[in-house]
Image (cartoon, rainbow, N blue to C red; front, side, top):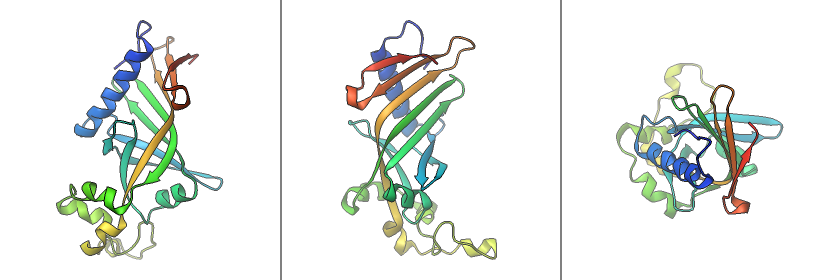
Length: 188
């Protein structure tokens, strides 16, 4: 992927979205897992999530149990961040955006692709983060509540920065939705 000094802004932009698209279908791609940041008052919460989809409007989609802290955070404050890192290429991608939740009709196609044991991620009788006395208390499931607890979070990027690490010649560029995704080179 690397950004090179002879890369145009358009080439960098297209490469970024190609890599994100590959992360959706390739479970070993470094961008498959991203750090999603949200805020809860003065606290910043970060956690790894799985990139599940991307649409033609460049929105990203991740799944969650709707009883989690991240969902509560994003309901109160839709501002969020996403952080990707490609270790082999030494590329960092940071996104600032807004989070939205799909309604029942729109999330159903995503629910329909979840099968087998994966349904348990949304079917825990106890809510994520609930205190327990014994580890075994966490493993009680009711699959009939899975769809009700399932959330699809749409991340609508507002600004994206890429940083190519290269010894003393790092390269950095920012793209903003408000500027029709025109690239702006930055001092690293």
